[in-house]
Amino acid sequence: MSDFEVIIYEKQDGIAYITLNRPKALNAYNIKMRDELYEVLGAINDDAEVEVVILKGSGDKAFCAGADLTEFLTAPPPVFARQARFARDVWGRFLSVEQPVIAALHGYVLGSGIEMCLCCDIRLASDDARFGLPEPGLGIIPAAGGSQTLPRTVGVAPALEILMSGRWIDAQEALKIKLVNKVLPRPDLFPAAEKLAKKIKSFPQPALRAVKQAVWRGLDLPLAEGLALEARFARQLLTK
Ligand code: COA
Image (tube, rainbow, N blue to C red; front, side):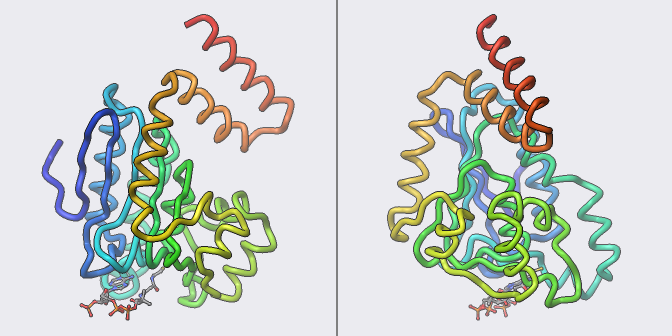
């Protein structure tokens, strides 16, 4: 895999670690980061040694402070920046990674930061995490899936309130509305993510991958079709 500039990729004992690595810009999501995430997620999906993935941010202050405003709302113009982001569907890549993905969230989790973690399977947050979707206040809407993934995760009313008011929420509220699975003291965040990753990877891989697909794909289906999908996965596992 090529050398990365704005992410760090590490792999150890079946766990892949992706670290967003622009700490001076609060890990703002720029085009370079999009390209590097796209590449690394594709490689992870094809890597039989990787059983589980942890996504985190570097530095003290942020998991990710959203889209890079210097690229995004200035030059190139928003419409070009948007097209550039759509050109590579990194969000689809997040969802199509077969291995479980855990997001470890600290500090600012804004805009694309929330949208990115909503494409992960499990979200752990430190008690200093703050979540917000500033897009409508900037005259745009979330376009990295947030208008769809947030209501699917927390329900319509909380999602609309967060989007329409621009209100940021703290980690405890994020837990209450089920935006995150668990809140931990900051020093415990990464150890907890690793502990969970180790637990997850102790389970049989085919079952983990099947349950991930059954849940995510089933969300888009009527119940009867979802049940049929589940039955197909169950049969496949029995015949392996
Ligand atoms: N894009 C580009 N750079 C960003 C950024 C973003 N989304 N968010 C923060 N940065 C940069 C700042 O410009 C600053 O750079 P500098 O040191 O060269 O001046 C650095 O990160 C630190 O940010 P700063 O604003 O000084 O930190 P803070 O603790 O005072 O405030 C925030 C943190 C998150 C409240 C503030 O940076 C902010 O509002 N960022 C924009 C959030 C946003 O609207 N994201 C886009 C969503 S679509």
